[in-house]
Amino acid sequence: MSVARLETRLKPEIYEMVKQAAQITGRTITDFVAASLYAEAKKTIEEYSMIKLSLADQERFLQALNQPNEPNKAMKKAEERHKLLIKAN
Image (tube, rainbow, N blue to C red; front, side):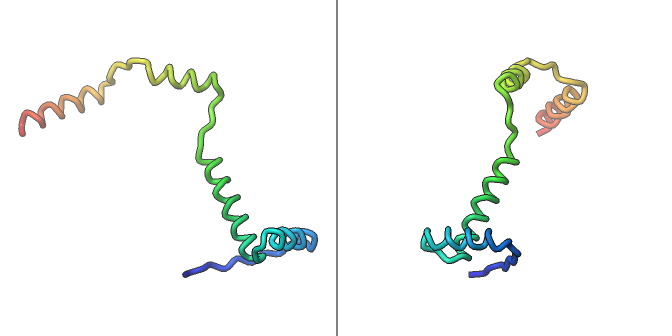
């Protein structure tokens, strides 16, 4: 299994707390730190990958999606090209 190395400097009190938590859970410090870092990184990525809307904004968004829109000039032109292409084949 391939692994990457990560080094960090901690204040002694933080190190002791991490060491104690690792001992309590029956893991090595390395395993405890790796699992904790992974969980926090995953949580952060998920949190920043979502767009959160208030209930009012959700309602406005749904209303905007449900509004019928007239095709613009570019869309009409693309539709005509599509029809010509389909007729040709």
